[in-house]
Length: 134
Image 1 (cartoon, helix red, strand yellow):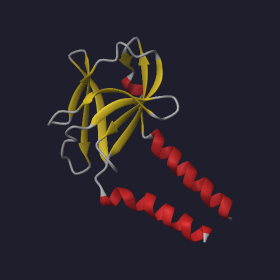
Image 2: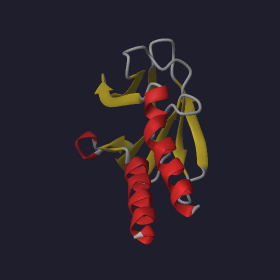
Image 3: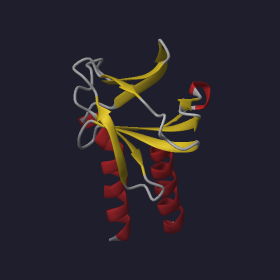
């Protein structure tokens, strides 16, 4: 029974992206302002996606804004404390992207942004489940 449940969980985790378009997010500075651009894997903009920081425990934190019809949002992080933060792009169920952003004096160090740490944690969890089964 446990092996069937583990197989179903793994199949659901692997199959979910094929049923929904993944979100891809890019960050960059344009005229001194941090701009976030988010789109689905099919190239369509992620209109109305909620952009938020996650709390240290992984729960939703403050909402920073929503993307416009072009999937764009200009971000002001001047009130964000220095350090590494998890940024979530939430386009609805099955449509999320996660970025680990290093902030220093209200600016993101673009060359140190890591995409998808949440996904890596899920992969680690699946590997852990598989190891326990053996």
